[in-house]
Image (tube, rainbow, N blue to C red; front, side):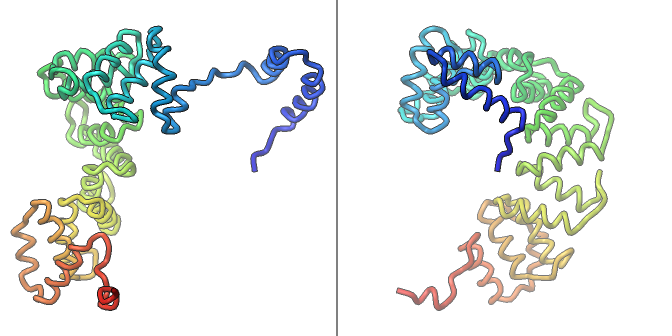
Length: 325
């Protein structure tokens, strides 16, 4: 139950008779604002968008957009970019993003940069994309900072500068961008553009993994397995590998298979190892070393493993269930 502070209750008690005597809604609002502060304007177009009423949002945003309202222009661009309630139209979306960028909406600047980066709705132009990323990054946009960091590492459309890249990655990581946390963690581990800091690097990769970022799930598990930047913890490493494998990573599935095949940190289980191997193989990952570990798996266990993989992540039906009409 939400508790209303005593001071607010007292204010409400004083306000009630005053509102009853108010001669107009405007007067009542003025008294309310004197006590509670000015009301925040409601963005009806954005509210409709949030509730999934995309055509309503579009109709509400269009008159504002025609008056150079940048947020409304960005909202329209999003609707066309994603095809929400209308046919997907990247070219039209890019035009609206360009207008919103011109009118100062940095979210639009970033999205327009991505369109030029990928050649979606506009001709592919990485130089133009870099200019837009830089513009957005200079206003503090975390996603733009991350992309500018990658450009500084690549060194084609921005100055080759690992130190600058590391600084931008740090800013984006502090904004809790999972990809940036992972890449900044790797930078700290390797000492690329910054002094090596294994513990700080491992912590960043952990933060990224906690957000479910695939590469971080695998690499944090490996750091725990090796004891690099963190205290070695085989149980935790297996738990992170399992999480990544269950999310569909063939690398994690292959590594988990090896642990079950060797009985390292888990009970030796060739059938489960063969199941994870089968799942990894379906995604094109083969491993001769793992095949050697599983050379002694029985034909029955191998068949059961393949059956489990076929129904994964569900369990294969029991015989009684399979006989049901």
